[in-house]
Amino acid sequence: MSSIDLHFHSNASDGALAPAEVIARAAEREATLVALTDHDCTNGLAEARASALELGLGFLNGVEVSVTWSGKHTVHIVGLGIDPSNAVLAAGLQSIRDGRVNRAREMGESLAKIGIAGAFDGAMAVCDNPEMIGRTHFARFLVASGEVKDVRTVFRKYLTPGKPGYVPHQWASLADAVGWICAAGGMAVIAHPGRYDFGRTLTERLILDFKDAGGEGIEVASGSHSLDDRHKYALIAQRYGLYASA
Ligand code: MN
View 1: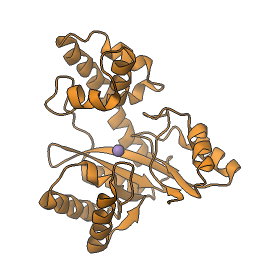
View 2 (view 1 turned 90 degrees about the horizontal axis):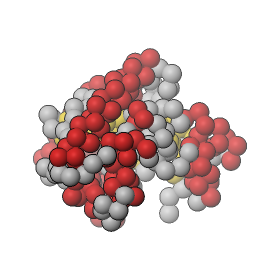
View 3 (view 1 turned 135 degrees about the vertical axis):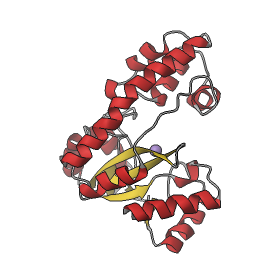
């Protein structure tokens, strides 16, 4: 039973609800402290903050930065308590967003090659903020068009490494992402470590690189974690002296 949720998205990135709507839902669930952490953008924060204030919820400005670590692994780093007007952070996030649209075009082309036409336009049509186009929007389009039965299946069949619609992309470096968050006065947190499928050695390397860059926290409770994962990452947080996030 957690009343703290420091990782969720609005339609400013790939969430389904407007910032005020997702905050209202958190209030219904009796959350006491929340952070909106949209992918690579901070557009939703002002609306979310106003809504949290109105509903009496504690609110932290957040963001989730896409990182390519160790050459090939995509890792997400959450920033909490950031100043979204910080120029270093704003420029860094802009550079990531610029890469998204180009990648989405390539994804559309690669899906067309296996007979799925119109995926780029279709994904754009279900994306509220064209700069934030991503795999989730392609997944929603493919489900809505009847091509695939659900979002999970789309990712498994088309949108993960080695599959026909997957386009590798270089996101920010780990050191840059953590540096931008720290420059903006925030605390950097490794998002949903249980999702990365790293063994013990790689997990340890990630944590040490992250700490070297100035990172301070790791998600322990997450919608992507089983109860076993929670236990595992709680112990890891203790062992490496990281704050636990939820
Ligand atoms: Mn994430």
